[in-house]
Image (cartoon, rainbow, N blue to C red):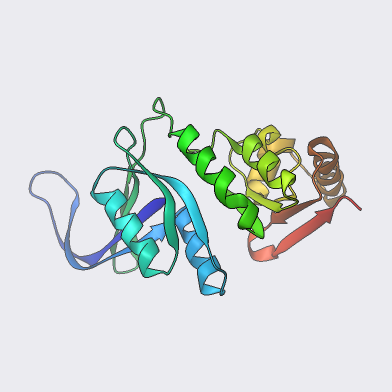
Length: 227
């Protein structure tokens, strides 16, 4: 779960302290980002969404939970951890120019409270129609195989938006949805469409998936199935 903070403004001078632009902020906005953006999109489509994730005990975490409630999302599965730093992406934009992005991320050496997350999922997954796993590599999802097993026990579909080159944690998910870059990072270069398709079906077989949906930017998307 992330907070996207936007500062819009204008630049009319260069700083006397260093050769950098000085932006006068005219407007600011905060939105749910990362997995929070997935949650908001599902809610906007009319789905009843229950979110499970981690924030820190900080101002960013407070804002994330407040925005979830404002978007009519049940935040009871959001674990607040004193040792975990909430994710913040602060973008500074002058006119049409994106000047800078400041990232505040959790300490990679501090794991999210996995036991609490799993306990919550064990209680709530049976009442769900589907599980969507949005992996951003921030330490909150070191338990994906366990989540998939929990869903399988109740015959519930699992959709995974992956992160990183190693997709082995997503074995036996219903469908995995990498973008082209993530797919190539996992399976290697695909110089031709034939090679691309061959590696897609091979990945489905290797991970025992029911399907693979590769998003391809302006080209749209390609869906592969085990059949």
